[in-house]
Length: 224
Image (cartoon, rainbow, N blue to C red):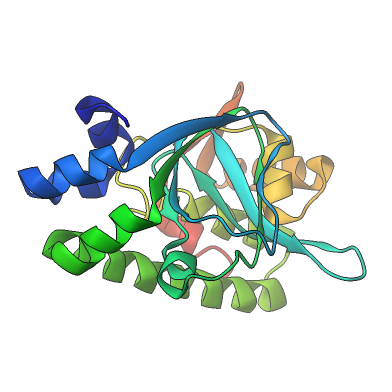
């Protein structure tokens, strides 16, 4: 069980719950740490928790039968996901890998379902989240076919600053160029080249150990 302050810090949706809903949510959440490169779950595993990133960075992806790795999304601290698997009570259809030392927040399924059945505020959050994720995956299919490497990288970074999926307004993100490449399906060298192009266009600023996004809106439209 996490503390009240911890839940408010790691879960923006908790701020809109009633006192009873908040206390129920808090009692149903634990935290677990994963080392860099570690699997949080494999495709086909049952992970009966709604999951959030407390600290760190993870990659949501899969591997084809031919061995090709495909990244579906990157998630940073503040992001919550997996509600579809919980609602359908099915195994995960993707791998979850910690790209750096990561601490996950895990809400048990019974608590999630209680909030789903009793909290208007929680359901409003879920509707917005599901709608935004649908848009994200439609966009993924679109720009994988239409954009060059720099465009794909720009769009992937912009999703890490999406105001619906992440309430944290801070424009800085601690992330290495290697991690950005893993999220975008690019080599470190190709990621570096694309980042320099975006920096020259004043869309972001490269810093030691991270990036600062100067124009998330333009990043989200880059390549149009």
